[in-house]
Image 1 (cartoon, rainbow, N blue to C red):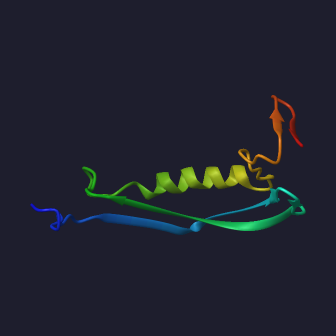
Image 2: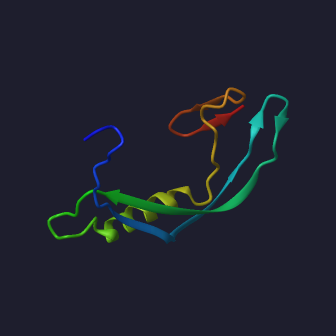
Image 3: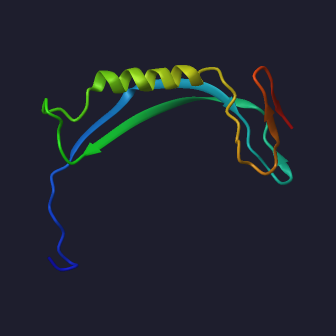
Length: 101
């Protein structure tokens, strides 16, 4: 096979986009600017692609993915999302307190 030829493979896909929602707050900060704290409603979709199906001829057990993603979104509901690697804020935390400066 030369460099212009590609192996033709069938791919299997699954997209879940109507199950996962959460609302959280955030702010944006960079040099000379800090946005006020405000919230958004977020929607999360999941797309899974694989080259083959499992032994049950399924891509994945969608109920497991729904359970995992629902748990993640439930943990993000009503939270403050912080930019952990932003150079303009300092975040310190211990078991009981998170300080943002």
